[in-house]
Length: 313
Image (cartoon, rainbow, N blue to C red; front, side):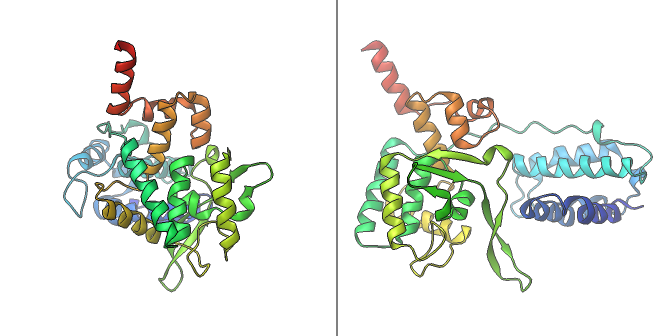
């Protein structure tokens, strides 16, 4: 059997039934754009380990078809997983005489710096949002940015959040789902509610009084089951929310940072204020404190200065 034929079978019968839709689509794109054009016509047992390894390693340098630049570490990891998982299943089912996936090695990508806002930038963002809220502009979207800054929610978790997930009496917020933009059968983009990123992403976040008050005010004006909605009560898609965030940064003249920088900012502020690693890890929905430490072991330069002043003052 040709590898391309097997990939189609594997995708529909062994990936689609068990994986999140977003994961299935990512695998589908990786196969369509990369694996099928390069290896699809090879017989499974004729696949060459060295050739596959050379291809995967090369993605670090010239993998991006759009820019000619390297692929992200996550994209390379996904392609690597498709190779290994599909080949393992083919071997277990007897479509391949040998399993070569264990001979492949994931290339070590350079460490990427965690990007977050400085305390001064964060203050400017919050002050600007306060001013805009007085004009009642994009109220729930703006408050959504505040929620992310102070809880570390991912954008998909924020936009999937419903009022039933907020327990005002016990001051807690339950994260049990996420969302992403996808296409319906007519090719139109829509918001798709999905399972959380990982099992650990299911979590409960205590709400301080300031956020509880903010959410209470938002609920009074809400016309939707979702915490974040537009002025008509309609659901907000991920891309739309990202645009609103980017326009806010542009308005303030703050250099562009991905929306995930809000999550990094929350983690960095918590780290600076000596929140213990286990608590921070659980609030962020990480599998273990080791992951949290690996990402946020750094401190911002301003914070380091303060610490040095305290030590040497």
